[in-house]
Image (cartoon, rainbow, N blue to C red; front, top):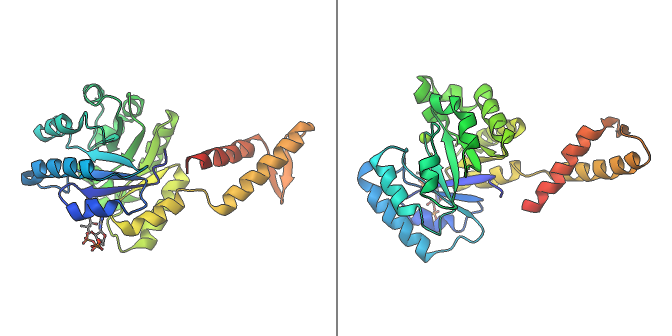
Length: 272
Ligand code: COA
Ligand code: MG
């Protein structure tokens, strides 16, 4: 499943929930955690149930971000949504490793843990190998808080992002990049998304409609890439058939490694 753009929508905001129907995000994440004040948690749960009963989002993945595991609010969230058939996936904030109890309570639903604490980072391998986990996402602001550093240093942190991306793909899990808070700065958003795409991320969590189009574009192969991939496949297969595994295409070496890249580009097109 494509998760190029995952839009957060505050669970208390009916207008934004309705608006999310019309937007091109691959996933919608109804939030019960940090965009919902403590006094509004129950109202948010009620509203999400009402809205998901009334409306249908077509092929979009519908997710709920519950409160951190171990809290009273998260127990209520799981109680309410663990068996709700409209919801496909549970987003687990500040995840630090143990997901087995949660998995038992959500049936076939999938899990998208957020890596946003120092301990979550150290538990990456356990998290990506846990049953039901299909993607992990990075939360830079909470990560900075957890470390006692600054969001500005963690937002585009190549070291942290590289480890997250490698840990995820090692076990067939999609790495999803952090949200970008300034929703008017689309150039800044694009720059950050291109950086994370080049590190292996498959998508980005977003907070505003203005960021969706850029995320969908950046996390899809470009026309030029598709064209190049098809050309590489054709020429490589033709030459391999007559015994040549290394050829020059437009002045560049093409061998089995480029062929594997080209195949993965073309195979992933089927998802779109
Ligand atoms: N989901 C759905 N629709 C959204 C949206 C979102 N996350 N953010 C904005 N919109 C809609 C608005 O409702 C408005 O719709 P309209 O033109 O039909 O009235 C339109 O997009 C333009 O919104 P704008 O006026 O620019 O923003 P805002 O002041 O309404 O909201 C935020 C700004 C930051 C509060 C809002 O984008 C938001 O709540 N984002 C998600 C926050 C969140 O979930 N945080 C937790 C995870 S980090
Ligand atoms: Mg967070």
